[in-house]
Length: 215
Image 1 (cartoon, rainbow, N blue to C red):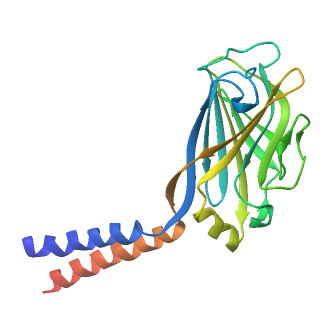
Image 2 (tube, rainbow, N blue to C red):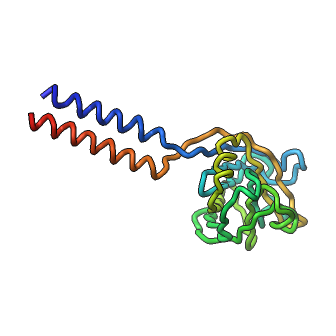
Image 3 (tube, rainbow, N blue to C red):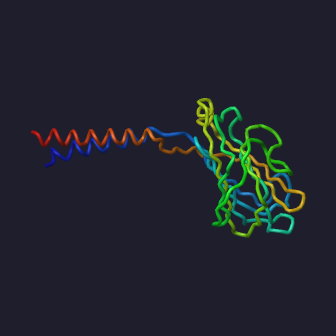
């Protein structure tokens, strides 16, 4: 019995080892600001969590932890993330999924940075989104998700990414722009090739088991 179990255990170990090796690079991080950062002190305190991967990027803003909401800063009308040159995107989905404190919807996405007029101020290394102003609540959580396809150069650039620009346009007055660079912690996510390797590993386990049974 022990002689049968050993090859099975070894096969599973090899499956885990090789499946874990097929990973896509990405970056994630968190930026905590009690105001607008270096730009001023009129924005509400918030935490900016971001995650950038090979096919999508997500920004979540959680309100709280500093200046409170006021009548001139209790809305968001646009957000952006800057991480790769525009030429690194083979395709870009202009529909941005939103989740505002549990309410799901969409905003319009564009490749361009943020200004008081929201998206489209240039064609730099930004993915942007704007839509109907969302009224903020203290403790509320607001998420935007962009989807895209990278070029081969984009995948290479993503692998070396170490920081992300985070931006948000607060209102409802003249707009208060958060514009900060945040360092990230490299992360890895499984690619479909991992599943192929997993299947191959399991096949190897079955073959080993079959050989033992035949003997």
